[in-house]
Amino acid sequence: METVQIPKQVCPNCGFELGEGVASEAGYGPKPGAFALCIPCGYILIYDQDLQLRELTDTEIQEVDSHPEVLEMQRFRAACLADPGVRKKIDETLMQGGRSKAEK
Image 1 (tube, rainbow, N blue to C red):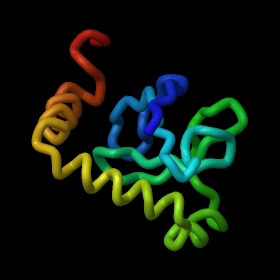
Image 2 (spheres, rainbow, N blue to C red):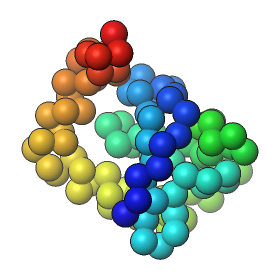
Image 3 (cartoon, one colour):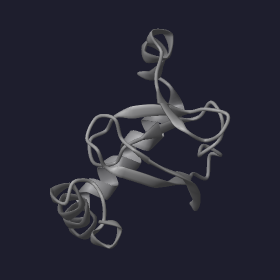
Image 4 (cartoon, rainbow, N blue to C red):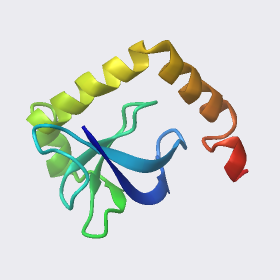
């Protein structure tokens, strides 16, 4: 998997700072119209033309449940949260208000 830097943004649901996206072997990843998933809270967003994240429209929400890209991201999120090191880092970041100590 390839990590892609995106403009720093904050998840509108949990406040976690999102600053990178992961491109999968299946070709999913940060690009206009692609879905994004906040690893800590599972909130689903979508990239606009400038790789800014926005909330889904009502129509997009109806389509998201069975979308293969979203299913792959949910499996990736589950694997991340199952890793104690990743889980600890997420928890520490959220306790600091969603941003790393260096950025405060």
